Amino acid sequence: MCRKIAAYRNGKMPEAMVTQKAGGTWAGNSADLGWQEYVFPINFNLKDDPFGNKTGIMLPAPLFDSLDLVLDYNFTISSTAGFVTGGTNHVFDLYALIVPRESREAMMAKRILVEVKKHDYTSLATGDEAFKLTLDSKRNLRQLYVQVYEAGVGEGVDVTNLVLKANNEVMWTTKWGDLQAQNAIHANWNPHVGKVNLLSVSTTDEHWTKIPAVYAVNTPITEEAYTIMSYVGDKITLAASAAAKYGILHLYSDVIPAMAVMDFDLDGIGMNMQPQGINDLELVITQGGADGAVEILEQSLSAVWGV
Image (cartoon, rainbow, N blue to C red; front, top):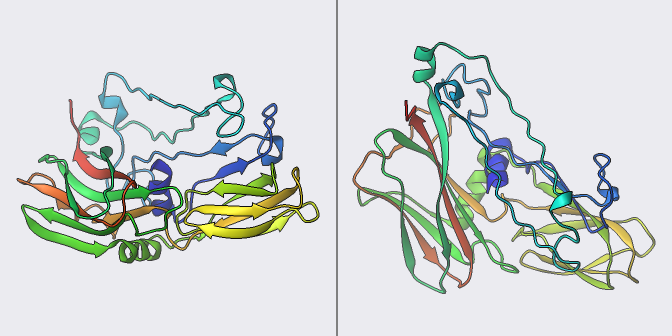
């Protein structure tokens, strides 16, 4: 979800290297070396105000006694279904944009961009489901993210409609596909989502893209490397004349994959958001298919807390 939020902010998926090739010693930015790399942006400012000078939105870290970053990860170790080696080959690099400290009074006046994972839920075949959102007089809801993924299932199947209610009044109602289309326009979306360096392990490889409305272009590297046989939701079945054939699979999506965003700050200055200091705030989803993994995350602007 971190990468999807950045995709909505920036209009394209964050950088990644994805490959089927076997791993070796890390030596640089090349998927041919068998390494995979993903970028996970965490933003404490707005897109058009990276230093927080205009809007006063940033993480005022000097106000706090300590600041910790905790990384919790779990990669499947498997020669067929995951990574063939363990934790010694998991490498993290951290880069941060840090601005000069201001006076305590100026830092106290800042607002903080807060992202909170609210719900994990498995969809049912039919019916509506309501989810309570955060109530806090110090916060305003800026964006609400809903991610829905099920292997092999297309967009807008497991969740068909979204309704936001404030104090039991409908504030926003939309179909899943309509909201995704609006998101693509607002984000100036680049449909090229990424690429995969392929190395066939059989004559009918399956690649699960996690892009429910994926379409792909294949570039063979070795003769008769691949043809695309079929699409089923996010799954692409590829044919190769034999194992150990090389190709590059370019992946495209007309919308941000598996995510829809309710955006209350389209002008990007943090002035027209949904207040959270009310009696009731909830998201209602209409379900159309069972077993979809639903995740709901809030992004709010908050006054400085804990000082």
